Length: 123
Image 1 (tube, rainbow, N blue to C red):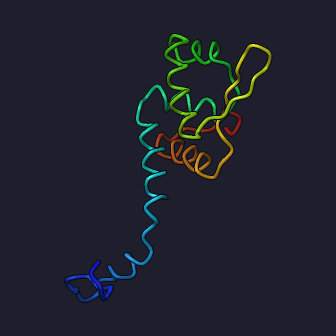
Image 2 (cartoon, helix red, strand yellow):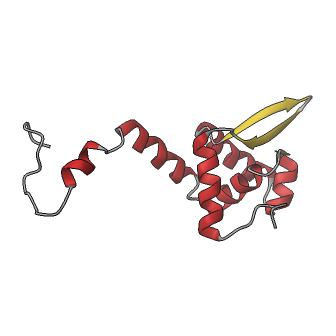
């Protein structure tokens, strides 16, 4: 915006100035865009959705989504780098689940609303 905080054109009945005042901070916009980008791959989206409902190891996830364990591991690295997934070690095995954050909960709800999916156990 220009130095006097008004838009170059004024249109009667529009409240663009109010909208500009409420624009989210660029860091928030970047974080949301990154999260959506990470879920832009159908396989990652499927893995993320599963992990929103249960904790699973790579081997079980690979069987659930009919992929190789290296491919699932790659997708998990991407999801983990974006803080969408967390892990815990149990002996030699890693177990993964969706991170418990407001963003992850919101993404989960959005995926189910868009896809008209019912959470397991809520039918």
